[in-house]
Image 1 (tube, rainbow, N blue to C red):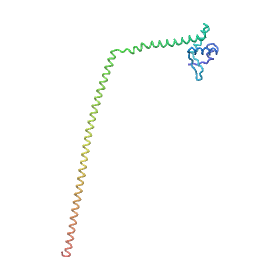
Image 2: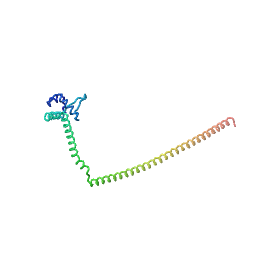
Image 3: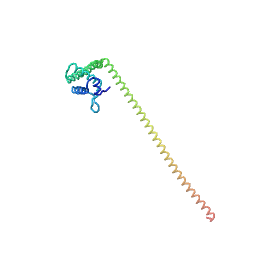
Image 4: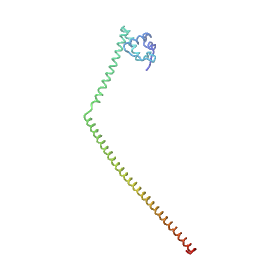
Length: 200
């Protein structure tokens, strides 16, 4: 979008710079809006050039006061905008109506699709429940088998410990008996030897 200064507008339209300012102020009072920069100065565009040319032309042709010309031009612009909006809405309305009209057969088809989807969801739900039940049963059986195996291993371990303890006890008793016997044999031999020496 090309931008113009007050001096540019004066040169293009063929009016004095103060006249540009006067037209701009009058148009703003009538409700026309100019683009302004950060400092608040007006920036003019091609659209503004057209309205300044119309003001100059009407002022020269009719001799009407500038404020009345400004009001007429601003109202004319507003009417053009509202006509454009009305035309756009008239074009849009039939399209919207077409979109709103839904055939009953379409509704029936959508209902059938919805029911089919619901049925499919229910079947899938049942399958998931059945699978979960199967998995739970298999896990329970596995847990039971593991517990039985653990208990059997514990029993074997206990039996082995008890067997080892009994064997150790027997070994100790046997060792003690053998030692007693050996000690008794030694005493007997010793007595036999002494009695031979001393004749007793």
